[in-house]
Length: 94
Image 1 (spheres, rainbow, N blue to C red):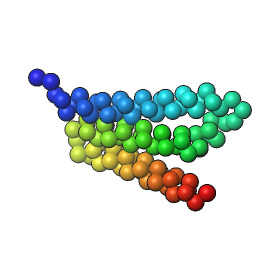
Image 2: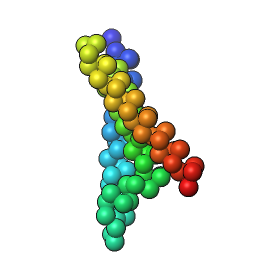
Image 3: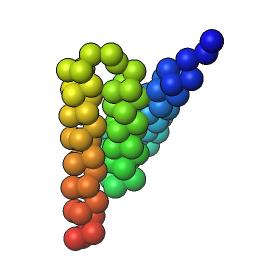
Image 4: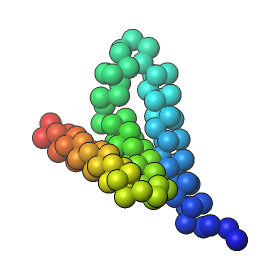
């Protein structure tokens, strides 16, 4: 029998990792005259990185068995969300 919950949790973290890698690749290719960190600091890249990190952490949190691993991934997801909200607030002030 297929473990659909396992398939769904794996799909979530793979989607998050793909988004992170695609964002880094696009940022690297567009950083011709600027540094990579300057490009990644733009609002659109930061949003994509935040969404990718949250999806990756959510998928990993759903995939692990031990409670302490779940708490660790929940912490990573919470920090990613906190950074995303902080970036959104900063962009609204400017």
